Length: 545
Image (tube, one colour):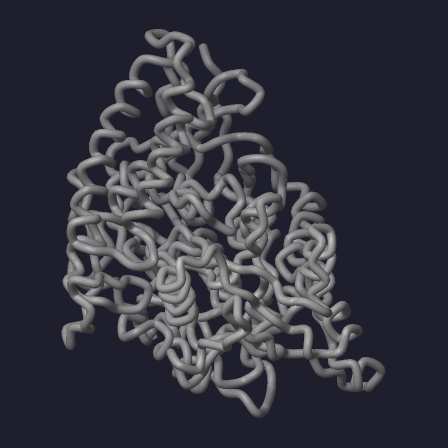
């Protein structure tokens, strides 16, 4: 009989949210952390800019909250914003306790009371982004991985893909995981399952995200009966390096925070014509401005210029960006950097409460896969890492307080009626078609007709993938294609239902913003109102005081 692997808590995802949650659960619990590839290969590792936090007397929680609400274009849930921002200092202190070293002000590095170097990013009214040069995500990831590897109660399962969560009765009791080695699908039982699998930006042809950002957690939670919200708000980072040998390298927003400006090919600076905040406007505004200028001129890219700053300053503050550009023959201390917008962050996701709990008992979702109400219609720069740590902590506390052993015996995975595929080229073709389709029709600027066409074609792709899934042995490309097609369909459905332009969603047929502020809540056919989170269907759950 196939073996069932048992843990108290199963965490799928090894980024900031998943790893920090594992570390904050009681040591008495047996925990498995599942990584799609190697530990630290997710989006956290590639986060350059830093983490927003209120750390200076000149700043305040109220100011950070106000900036977040403004960037979110009316759809942030204020209780969620206060909940998150109010815990920012606590999260920084926890990271420092884990061994994280953030950059200090140079003039105070030897002082008795040292002060962090804080940088400025788009949408912020104060310097409040704490960082480790331009490799903050990598530094955080390395610290968390090191701590998790030392924990005797945490097992690390690498190179495994989520197939689906397992539901028995009205609750989740485990998950099926595919081993990348080709050894088949293993069955895992757990009293609580946490999905921390990141966003779905790989649905787009151009993205700053790593290969694993295929919406796995969002799709699995939807299939399990969870509501999703606000998936039309896909954030496009304004400045992805444009070079044939580097299609996904992010030029951190901190560059603009330290004075970098955007220019056309003739060196004309254009952002002041679009917004009074110029290059420091929120990302949706900057990305649309770049998209507008590229389409108006038929240009392949625009240019980011920080060469007016001292060379040693640039190299010291942006060593990774400098090294990457130099490897491609671009000296950013002396010349402009070609950049284009690229899909970067999924602002919507699975509806959760302040503890990361979903509509289905036993299932939690944290990080980019979740819709907490923090980001609204547009995520403000560097709030995402903060969200990961805040909700990981609250989810860990909730799991520790409410975990009840279920002793469930999920049905082992059965692949006895499928065969090996000799048609995997079909999956590759469908993958390429989907990503081109999403880029062309569900991108920075949408139209009603484009969305209708996208919905029709994605429906056909989903049917093709479902047929393939039913007949053949599963593989990572098949699982990712299945999940991306489902999440892309949800994105299009959300976008089609929003008859206005707001934040990251711009429909040229409805260019104005409606006075009615509403979330886009989608409900799966197997949604169970008896176990759903409290709160009306047309709003996200309320937070307790």
